Image: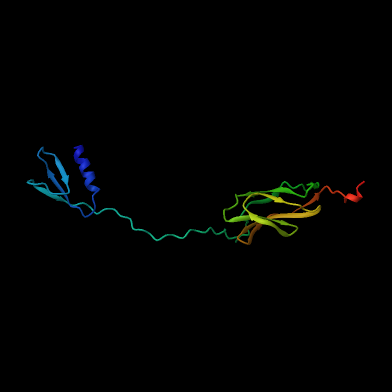
Length: 176
């Protein structure tokens, strides 16, 4: 019986145009072959059509579209800068420091973050929620973060004002 099953499976693997014959061999076992046996009556086996899958046209990748802001609901429930002292001066002797961005839900793949320093874009857009400012002058500044889709502002955080304190050496000739 097992040999018949193996024969059947092998025959099913033949190309679709091959003819299959069923017969009883000399030992009384049912057998299958792709050629009619010599001197033995055989029946032609009609197989159902093979399953086939038609190739489909490629589908263009789906580009995520931001949710429409019909109800004036922001895309991100939380969007704010962190690690900036507002009650005291920020001490950065060389004017370089890092701020964090708290964002919820997580930043979408198609969005980028960009800082606004004193109302002007600062640095290139990025998808990293830690942003560095370099060589800022001492004094009062304002800072916000924007979420961008390409070059369009999707959402902006509240503006934070802070004072930057830097160590300043007088010119070499005027040192005490």
